[in-house]
Length: 321
Image 1 (tube, rainbow, N blue to C red):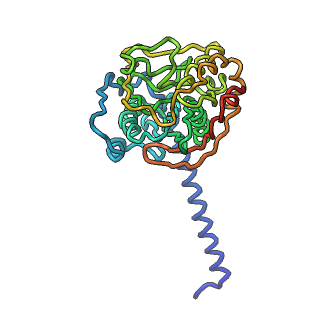
Image 2 (image 1 turned 45 degrees about the vertical axis):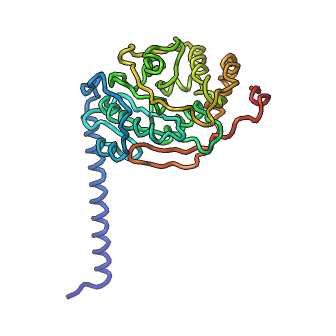
């Protein structure tokens, strides 16, 4: 004999409720299992046992993104990676100020992803692409990369890298230290020597606290040069010192190229450098203005295209602080 409709509906409700409760229990169990697994994992050793030391770095043979993908199967969407067998000591965002350097980016991804994974970092790669063809503003792109990366993940360390610089030793760890770290110490461009003691260009790392302490980086350096010295002045004023790996570990190669269009020498750089201490509290993260044009999650990196605005039209405007 068939049950009445009321009985059928009641049984259906019971079945649906049981399915829901079962799914809820499974979800809680899975979450608890994940949390337990994370708790059971030990912290990654320092230094990583996966490091191999000096590397062969050459740019004569082109590389493809397909090759990079195949050689880095452990990457997650957006160029994210976490060690699977230990808990990384730092969460690192790699920020690349960028425009019109696609071939250089391929080399960077090809060499850096394996290095960063051997260093056992919890990391993400962010290419901060300046939209349009107005004058390039590297330091502002660095500020933007810092701000945008923090919207995605609780990073505690930020590595800022020019797209054309590749480390020649994986013991040059792309992480943060008790003092701001200059990583590209010995570049082939400079005969594998530090050009001057205050030099902070190329590749550097700062913790979140260190960046906040100096109000980030200047937004008013349009064109080539000066921003690295401004950053040094900021750190020096806040009683920070530069730490570096030794010259052998800090060796890097630079991809040779012509100067980018609309990245001519900044004629205001010398005056701005002398005024850093007057401007640093009002020019930086607290005055950062930009517009996000697009965010694209690729397999190997996150591309964030941004409108940084335009430089003042004349020197009188540029001189205003």
